[in-house]
Each structure stands twice: as C-alpha cells, then as structure tokens.
Length: 351
Image (cartoon, rainbow, N blue to C red):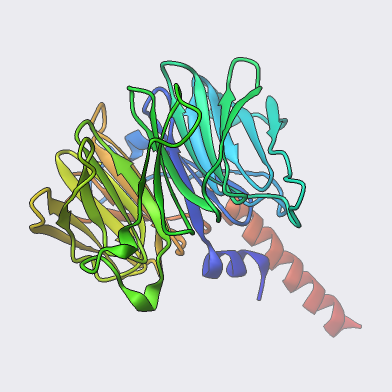
C-alpha cells in the first residue's frame, strides 16, 4: 500500500483549533500533519465543493495530540513538548521552524516521555494549562515559556483539562476522577468519582474520564461512565445522558450539550437530557470538536477518519471534507508518480 493510501485509511485527527481571526481551521493528526481550511470556503454553494486544503508536515515522529491558538501562533501539544508555529495569514503559511518550544520534564520514576494530551488557554492571563500522560497538569506562561506550577493529584494520565474565568481548573483522567483546582490554592479543591455512581457506571468500559467541559453554572464529563452534568457549586449530579458509546468529546454548545466518542453518531441534548439531534459520522471514534458562533457559524467534528464533518447549525451534517486526497498540489504529485511508474514499466519492457 502506498504511503498516501495508508494515511487515508488510517488517518486519526485528535486535535483542531480556529485561528485568532476566526477565519481558518487547523486539524492535526498522528502522522504529524497539520491541515488548514479557509472557513470562507464553507460559504460556497452546495454545488461547489470547498477548495483544497493546505498541509504542513511536522515530521512522522511528531504525534499531534492537541492544538490551541494564541495571537499569531498555532500551539502544538505533542509527546514531551509544546511548541509554537507562527501563522502568516496574508500568505496562509505556517512557519517552517518552531518559534518557541517548551519541554515537559520527565519524572524521576518515569520510563517514557509523557504525552501532552489536552491544553486549555486562558487568554486573559496568557497562561496555558497542559494535561499530560504523567498525571500532572502544567501551568505555562506564554510570555516567557516558564512552567509556573504543577498540579499533582491524578494517579494516571490526564485526558482533559479546561478552566473558567474565576481561576478554577477542571481535569479528567484515566484514574476515574474529575478534579477541581484553583490557581490561588496549592491543593485540589474538590474531587468527583463518577464511576461510583450506580446510574453512571458502565462496568465493561471502565472508570476513566475522557472529556470534561464547564460553563458558568455546570460541569459536564464522561468517558467509561455515562456522560453527566454536575452543578458547579454543590457538585451534585443533576442529569445523565444516554449516549450509547464511550465518551471522548463533550461540550456545552449554544445552551445545549454535545457528545461524541466511540459511536457512529454524535449527539446533541438539551440540558434537561432530551435528545434533539442524532448526527451520523463516518468516524470509528470521534476525538475532536471545534466550533464558533461568529463570524462564520460552524462546527467541525473529527476523529479516526480521513474526513472533517461540518455542521453549520450544530444539529445537521452539512458536508464532509476529505483531508488526504484534497490537498493543494497533491494531485500534481500523484500524476508525477504515475508517470514515473509508467516510465519504469516501459523501460523494463524495452530491456
């Protein structure tokens, strides 16, 4: 199987981000490639497909686990490091060299370099929070690249980290816990163990927490246990959602709850638990969603598939965009390869 066919068959997109200008979508995969889509392409008529994407390879040794965007830098979370690539919007290019790099320290008893699995960016303080495979959440200053603090308490790798404007940080991990932290206190301020709730436990799928989301009043989480909502002040479970698969994505979207994971549909619920949209996807598993309300209302859903699933109203699937096979200049390279194959066969016949 040729490399491009292999990538199309096994493409796994774990990370997406939208530029500061809200005009470009970035998607990164485990092959170390970053795809860029101009969002205005989605406003074309239904009979006219979006234009080709651009791709910026980071190297086959780079697993792109998570992405964020700050000013004119795309922030990449990989294995053992976080780095920034300058985005030139006028030329629509990512820098060939890393603008800056932060290495995640290895623990004394560690046997491997920890993955950076999740990142949350506090734009007000220009601080990045990175949840990693060593069970630690690192607080990083984007002004000088210094690791300001380590949040310790999880006993297994962190899958998800998010925060809010009040200085609270929320993390979910393989150890089955959701932990609440404060940037103003040394120790965690609260602990949730959803798997200990009989209404949430799904024994065959384990206790791990794959995704966490928060808004002003509520906390949403899921993984092996069923996705559920907790009131932020009381931390009481108030609602359970009947999503039929393991959960890797959960979000509060436009006063609704959006859930995805190891299932052939992603689903949107009201906060009261009523299913209002059951959207088919071609992913074996959904690992990433990114969305915005303006200036272009759009959501992109990605995972173990060679396609981005585009939702313009968050309830219906509008289009699917191929990644490999839909890149600028890719068809020209394919034609050159085919010509080389023809020339080689002609020469062998002549010999």
